[in-house]
Length: 411
Image (cartoon, rainbow, N blue to C red):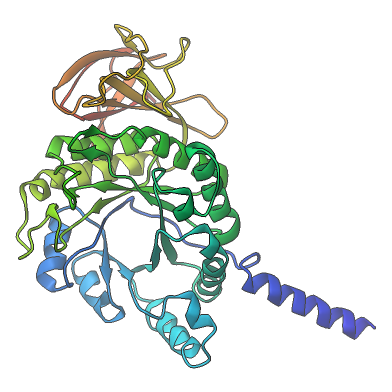
């Protein structure tokens, strides 16, 4: 009887492990992610261009990790074996095991790319694949990207209004797949005007990531692929990156680096860097530097001063960080561009905010305001990676279009 009990316990342990309930992930995000979706074939020239542009996670094959290491990049490995069907194929599963063994100890290895925008009906099979990878290589991310809020209920595999269906989609993803990261895309800049759900999407993902205790990444628009969408300017893309930072994102990705049928982007079809690529060099490095400062903290709130977009939250009257003059909350009339500022609060979990990210929500004009803090403050210089000398609690700010400032209470 005792032997039978031991056998049953071992079988149960195996079942739990293969379902991902006992296999513990040891993956850490490390340097905040700056990456892209859809790019050229990887060569040393392309890798160098990406590194110089401030990207730090790039697509590659298993045989290109040495190249990634030469350019101080982290590789996201793409391979046809990284699919749920592989687990059910007796011939392919050993090949997948061999792939994992060949890359898991490489210093440039960072993530396995699995799929873009799966329907919720596929979450169970991808949950099994994530668990399988985690059991054999717990140190590296299994990357899956999710739909935006404007996906149809049929695409999501859920029912209800936009917020209900999408929130359920996120919860199912977390519960079933047990990811280490939430990644999603949302494309905001249409020819007819800015779309209305950007901050709703950002806020719902922020909430889901906080609840799950994992980081999130926002794939933002850097091109057009349709007559209905416009090519975003450098200011507009900076706005996307910095609003993501204010909401607590630990990663940004650009759609696209370059791809046939897409205009704008970071490079032309023949691989030449665009004006946007040049402007993003600073934006990318600033984002990574600021997000690294916020990484040990928790996002405690993201508050709007001025236009309150769909899904946005107005700055509370008794907020510890506030602006002078106060900008009264208003309903959106013209979202091109949103007016006012967003303040992202950060601090220890369960504690009071110690850091604030202030973003100018006008991507067409610079803006001036005064930040009022509970006590003296310091301002972060991302180019230097250092904090300023202590300054008074009333801090004048001048922010470029879509610009950002990271401020903390003086230590």
